[in-house]
Every structure is written in C-alpha cells, then in structure tokens.
Image: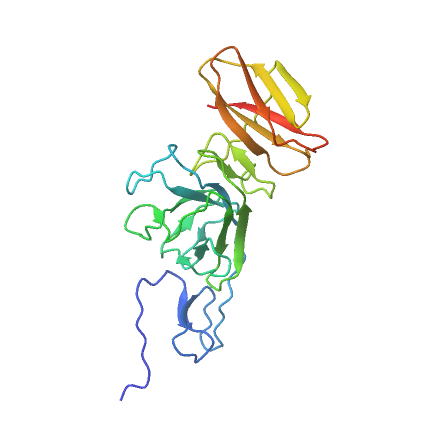
Length: 269
C-alpha cells in the first residue's frame, strides 16, 4: 500500500525540495535553505537584482531573436558582487499575481551582469533567451521580480511610453526617477543622453498657446518634451516633428492656464 510519494524533475543544484508548510498536501516547492531533520524553511535571502531597463513600445528598434518581431523586452541587472541563481523566481506584470511566470531552472546572472527578458507572450524556454507569458502595456503598468516565496525582490511602475525609446535606471541599478534612454542597450550598461535645447530657440506665448521655434537640420526628426515642474521625475512628450528647412516650429495648445512650463527639444538619432 502506497502511503506517500513525490515526483520531481529539473532539480536545481544546491536547492532542497519539499512541502511547505510541513506535511501540507500538494504544496511542493524548492527551498534555498536545506533543513534536514528540522521544519522546512521557504524563505529566501535578499538578492540585489534590479529591473534595469525596459521597452514597452518597440516598433522598429530591436528584433526578437525568436521570431524576428519587434516585441516588448526588459532587462535584469545584478548589482551584487556574487552570481545570483534565479531558478524558481517569478516575473509578472500583475502585482496581484506575483507567480505569473516562473524563471526556468539554470538561469543565473553574474555579478554586475545583465539578463534580457522578452515580454512577448511566447512562454518558451527552448531558446537561449527568456520569453514570458505576458506583454507590456505601452500606456503604462508595472514589472515585478519575486522570489520563490513570492516576496518582492524588485518592482518598477512606469507611465506612458514613447515609441522606440527605452526607459530605465541611470546609473545601472540606481533608484528612481527613471529616465528615457535615447540609446537602448539591452544586455549592457545603460546610457543616458538627456534631450538638449537647440542653441537658437524662440518661445512666444499667446492666449492658450505657446509657439516654439529653433534652428533645425532639414529632413531630421525632433521630439519636443515639456514639464511644468523641474522637480518632476520625467518629461512628457508633446510630439515628434520633421524639419523641412533650417527653422522648425511647433505650437503647444496644452498650456492653457499653466503658470510655467519648461521645454526640451531632442534631435532624434
């Protein structure tokens, strides 16, 4: 007569496997701390891994190696001094479902290393890259990294995204505010080149409108950003325009009733 049994596969090196809580039914899980002869312990040590960069509006910048499509992606960064084994950790875009996608066994990040994750809803581990069972929302949402006990390792919350700009931390692993990164660097250190003012710009204001004009390069694209308080963490995109001559102008009709507004004009790479 069978009193008890278990079936397991893809066991991770140096990780115990068992029931939590002790004697529970069907609550099998991997343990970082092995406790032979003592109660099972499902806690995990703190790891210094950060969600470092993400692109939730990838229209033409970086192709997914799995299918060649321009899918969402994000990057994990190990800010610690030792290799971190992420086997059994979870990734999610839904805080209420911390275990939405389990990172497969054998996944690790070396110290000061990077790991690219494709949020393409493919849910496959049959390639050299990770592919989750969710996508990112370019209108804004969250990305979470959770330990096997579902505790939060790191989480970022982002707003509306600009096409083909990544957003992330600068320097790598730094706390918010997050910055738009004009040079996406999946799998490498983040680069931040803040949008700059044209050396010759003119601002005119009227009743409910603001005109901006600047010295431009013909046939080059420009992005115009604004913020009403320089202490705010990010810039809001007003729009992208293409210059046809040596001077380009745009009109901001969203400044009605705003006592002050700051603008940045970026030459698109």
